[in-house]
Length: 190
Image 1 (tube, helix red, strand yellow):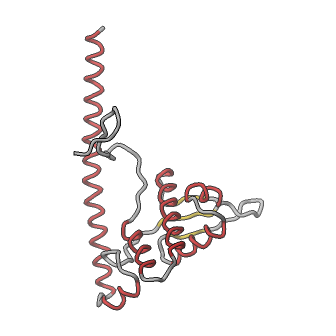
Image 2 (tube, rainbow, N blue to C red):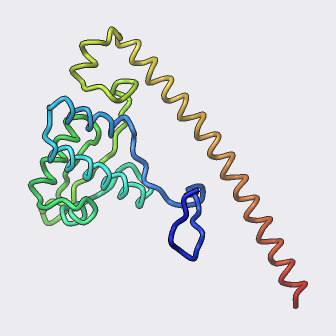
Image 3 (cartoon, rainbow, N blue to C red):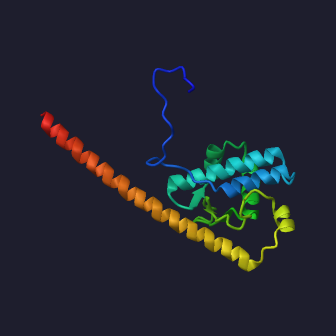
């Protein structure tokens, strides 16, 4: 076992009760494959990945798949260098159908921060690690086959939600029992 130079013991990460930003692995794999297939440069790959991670973090913070994000907010979250890079990244992510962008004007006729909706990435290959060109060459899938994949994906998501909701209820019951026990112990110590 590796020992770390610290007085405190290190714990394994546990996300069950902590906030998280949800990234779709097929989206991450698709971006990486686009770079590996030389469809985008290494800089574009880094920028797109940073933008995608920033969007998922903001969506997680807002607990919504649709967010409003100004250039300043996107600069802060993504670490990208300027608004042109942000615009290029958003355009490419929208081209790949990872996001949908809506622009609205306020009452003063000025544009409000753009609305960005994170989209399902079930349109990517099932493995999520092939480029669009390879998927087209090697796939004999029909539209009905794609619908089956999407249907199976939705079924899997529903099953996962049932499992997570069951776990959440159990965690809530455990937290309540723990609180009652602590309260009881506190009363006995007084």
